[in-house]
Length: 167
Image (tube, rainbow, N blue to C red):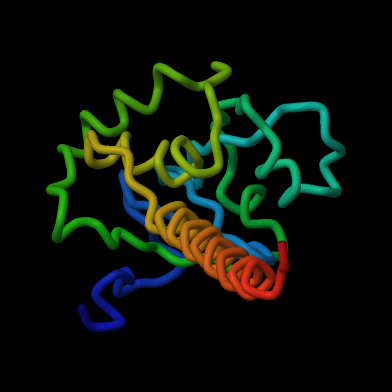
């Protein structure tokens, strides 16, 4: 895929209803879905962690609130891009259906899990009918590699000790 394939040609100021918005936060990306007239739908963790620890809040939260907010408020001082990166893998639902599906959960509490039910899963479920998150898949892969590395080092670390032990 060419770099510009996931960008709107009018990036970043003219998203269309149903577009996925990727917001670049420190250490992670937040995702929203553009509804039109400057508004997006997104989810935000609501567990009792101070908002100044937003990244930590995402890691430890189990609940999120579905919000309809102005795009400019969601982005704040961060940057964003229109990123419909899954369009070649999953055909987008008709825009009218995406908007209709988006209206129902606004204001609702939903289950949240950083790895299997995060903001990217939420908006891709609305756009494609399938919740996917490349960011979560990378995190799961990293966790698997770290665990495998620990297992290898543990095995290698214990193996020489057993050889040296005399009975």
